[in-house]
Image (cartoon, rainbow, N blue to C red):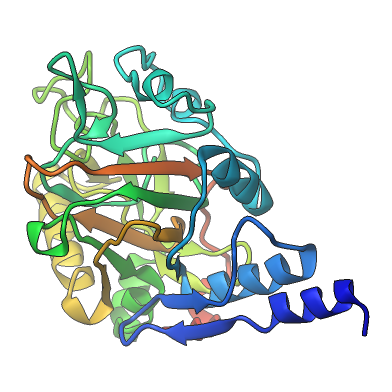
Length: 316
């Protein structure tokens, strides 16, 4: 056996440790800077199965992150996803980063935030659900994190499992219904520039996505929740929509559908943004937290004509 064949075999023999939760798995025995096509193919299959993968003790640079996210699809920058400019975000200049990378941090320069999302709680959401084509793969690399007892955990929800646990009559009730996703408040519950809390969600701009969404790669159904705030179930009164969404979110965010990630420096986490929802706990504002983020283009969510007869996802 030559050296190249031995190296390939070693790459393919990495270890997968499923999390004792509704989703997620740790992958051991890989250096993400050195992947061949066969190894990535197995990683991608594992990712679709577990929805979220954690790679510990990695040493990725921003350029390594861009190389890795390119394997999952076409990278897209936050500037390309937001309609407004992001001149107020100076972390890319501060850390000399490529445009595909966004910095999630509470670090300040001259008293002003250099990145996004600060140190407060981030509410349940899927990334960029207010776009016609929300992102698909989303990745975070932990460059600096607070001690685990200082907070900052990220919780992920398996939307396949939440769908598959529904009674058949509730699935029928959800089938065909869509939710408008307004871009009014961000996930830190801050008002978007130019938006107003007085705006009627029924008449503002925003895409409508099916509540039952069929995954284009697995062919299985999951709930597409997006985000609770600035959301509206099309065709209902505002009061009925609010009651409907409250019931759905109360059900979907049960602990049995959730995996909690406690960050360490060097962690790389990649999740399927199409079939998950996530949130973040607040953390000690005196602790520095710097995470590099990247994502790839997604698809326009759809409910397959035969959705109600499709099999459950394996991890559900």
